[in-house]
Amino acid sequence: MDISDSERIKQREIAFHKIHPNPDQATTAAHFLIEVDGILSAVPASSTLLHIQYDVLKTTLIEIEEALTELGLHLDTGLFNRLKRALHYYTEETVRANCGCDCCDLNCTDKLFAKRYQLIEHGCRDERPEHWRRYL
Image (cartoon, rainbow, N blue to C red; front, side):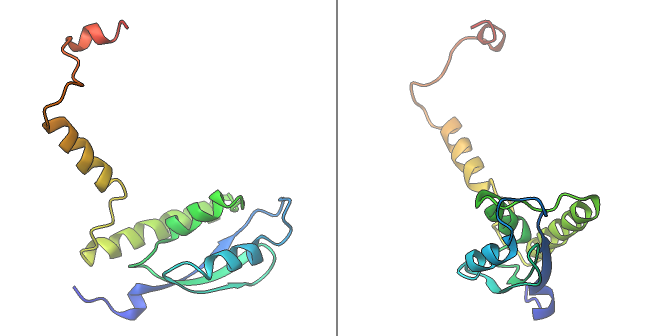
């Protein structure tokens, strides 16, 4: 299914917590994100606010924010920002699902390998009944 550029290209604001050892988290995040595939622009509006533009078919806001928290930056956790993020996560997941993007389920590969592991014959099976396994 083809998707228009207005639905595919997202413009978001990422707000950072004011109390942090790095006083300019937005600039640090912009330098990191500009190298990421799918990020079209990352411009710090202030020391705690970052404007980003990205392609939702290549990356999502949840992936971007998880990368920033792994980098050690602290996102603003106010109620308004949490609600706004949850709405963006939902709409981006819906857009990706409507496009037929097969990477919407982040654990699809893990589930595939777990299912395959259960089906093959190997010596790693515990033959005891389930209620006996809980005692050890």
